[in-house]
Amino acid sequence: DITLTADGKDTYEEVKKARRYRECKRTAGVSTTDLVGRMLLLTKCHHVSEEHMDQHRERARTLST
Image (cartoon, rainbow, N blue to C red):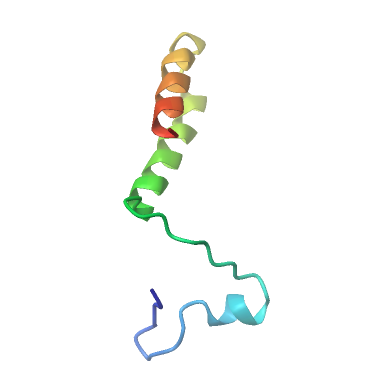
């Protein structure tokens, strides 16, 4: 979906002009919010003691399948 600013400009105009924009194909049934949430869950591991790392690794593995 194309997103626009309040004044009707392409949200990614500057990024596209800098040739830094890359569009990815969508996957049916997968939401961006869910993907970002999964990534944020994975970044919390550095705050957890080593004894809990296996639990987090298993959770990350099941989220990615």
